[in-house]
Length: 486
Image (tube, rainbow, N blue to C red; front, side, top):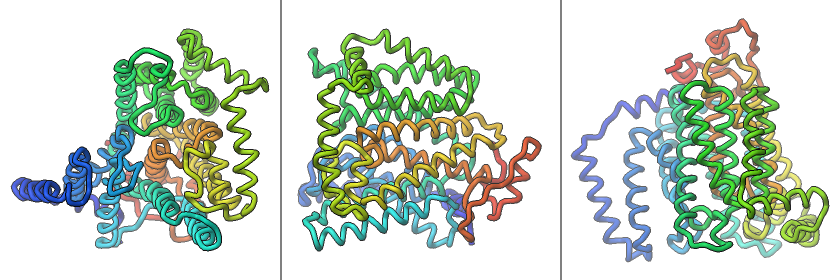
């Protein structure tokens, strides 16, 4: 049996001659030109289709190239319609091809998958989704087409995590993709600023909606998670890296404020507080001070928005929050309690109809699905917490795990008033980062034994070097876990 990193090295050693690649690209382009209108595809989406196919061919020889483009697409891709299916994004075209490439390599080379403790909650969620969809499709009025699309998207999230986990070869790969996550989110922030500047004046132009098909609340959640990642890095990285991170946070602060998302404001503050508590770093204390100063210097319409947050906590009437709570208590929760264990099935309600992840999970998958979801997030947070106890000289990886912990806390808060772990914009970055986190966990010696299924933790002491712990691991260390710090 070969490790997944071994098969990645074999794939990267092969190179297709440039002439053959050019001919292949030409054939694909000709095929797209002659079939784009015949199949009812909007000509405006032709560049997306063509670039996705060409990217797939390149990814055959280095999967990391495809994952890098996928990460950029997660942040920048608008939503569009294709073959009668709406709410599609660029990564929906790219990732299935990357998944097939990766799975074919795993099968051909009989590669071992890296261990993770998320298998059991994911299995429960998938199993409950299938049972609930079939039961409600037969005995209720569940639209099986909508259910299959929602279920397929959830499975795509899980596979994305698995592919990222097994595609990383070296520590350099991990650091590169962590930096790329920050860079991609900064591009989203720049896009938002350009979009805001291009809008006219008036109240509607004050709020930043994000790329086409995006809501300000979800875009705020996207900003919150990536800013928490950068804050974790800020607590560990020194020198030029810290200056660049401060510049990034300064850049992201303005578009984040312009979302006018009260849920995102609260989530950001709590996520920052969680990072400070976990790190006990004075830099985070100054970040809290700067956050307070930034709130005081914000425009009047932003301050008015923030004041309504205090009104919610003080029990005063806030129309949007009151209507949201009334919808949960008077309609969705009573409906969900009619089938409390299995729920009404995935896709039984539109994402825009329920604006709370917890209510959505209870509505779609019942109490069992909600518990499985909470267990999944808890295990992710536990892994990031444990990685902070590992003696590690790599500031980027250590800071990433710290920021991930704060990001999870922030997203759990954000989920109170948004479908944060279901909506594409926030869920895909979360599971991509989760794949990176568990790849780091594999390096650090904290993981789950895939053969015995019992949680194992390699003992760590201040005098126990990382290489000695890796030597005691119950699985053969790959190039990623060999102690290479390139």
